[in-house]
Length: 305
Image 1 (cartoon, rainbow, N blue to C red):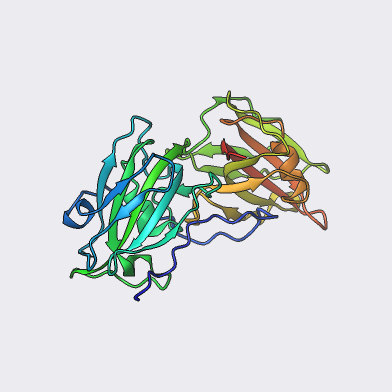
Image 2 (cartoon, rainbow, N blue to C red; image 1 turned 120 degrees about the vertical axis):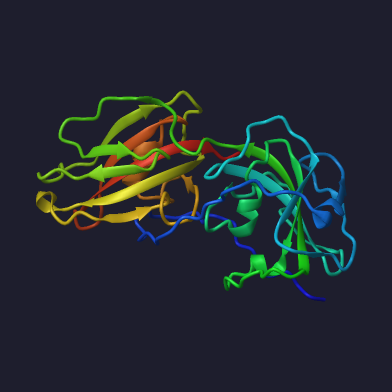
């Protein structure tokens, strides 16, 4: 049997937010339309539960096609929208189911248009929460080697996707006055923060300041928060500052951040526990050795437990 190349859409749970950023976030530019391949897919069963999927053997496709098998009435997914989905994957060559998410409600979020989500993330643009989608795309589009799908007909990989939930792509809370002596934060049109470090030295202790006040769910130490962040070094005297991490720019999409003790840098954890979905938080965190890092963190949601 010809197998479907591995598709990695899970955002890892990390113990630190200070990994270096890589350039270039992905971007989905338009809604994907249906075609003969996606329209040949059938799926029965309740939404949110593993469906019975029927795919004709020998199914091929040119490019990506998306058909809506069930129309939902929830929010529309745009570029940068984090979403929770469940899916079943079938091999178009054989018609057999190759993989599922397990339909346990524990699937990691996928960010529409993000580099890490690849062709599947692009296919979700313009979908709605509550939709069941049939997505047919060339197997080569799932290759981690970055192989091009080409223009000719190729063996299809077929996803039947239930779009269960979507989150805001940026913090939506009410702007607040920044703390005295803190770095200046300016937002790009898409919400990405730009951080300007002042000329003086960082405070000696960790500090947290609320930049936007949300009204969503209150975070506890038992939660896994969905966040977007930018982290910048605050060097002695304010000189030589540099971005040390940002999932606004590295293409990884939303970050799933467990807030239990020991799962994340303690200064970051302390800045988030007790906050609300919709908040944007500025945190000054001292790393091992005393170096200070400034985090601007948007709280976008909480994962189901």
